Image (cartoon, rainbow, N blue to C red):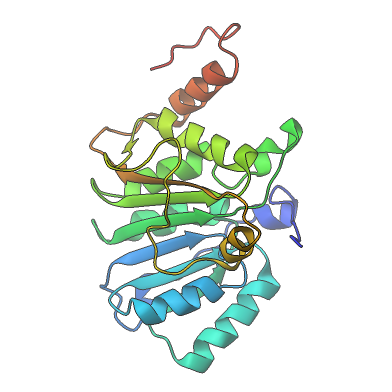
Length: 236
């Protein structure tokens, strides 16, 4: 059962200064995989052991899960993995900007909490500002992977990503949804959903060479897409 927290509450709006890679990883120069909303972290715990050539960082807004995940990591002595507590939309932009050019190899957002009501849309994890921060940190060819078992969750993430113009789909990927997971380890949620013979909706993006739009321009594009008959904003 999902235990939601409200990311717009005052406590979660306080920015946290995240430690740089030099303080997180044994070899801070390795490529970085950032998993946003890592929950209990078991997916990353296994992936980090399979991919010692990559530094994996899981961030999660529920502090007890981060505490438990860090205890597991420390017990295994994994120097290429770390978990941090934070609100991704508040605290990750500066951390991403501080990475060495080309160091960010992959960002994954998997099975984020669903916020269905329109008044709760600002609680969704992939807000326009976060998408732009991710796009700014990813060099051309680097990847953004999204997946969910709920169409009403994945479709807004796809909408904001594609409205930015900064990403493309691999030419050989099935559309609208990728058939397989590009990562060698499934999340716990993914394993459960597939075990129930239910669909998982996946999209893999690669950063292209298109310059970032302004935050205002991206928000206007999304508004125009949501209100095509009433919006007077340009779509590009």
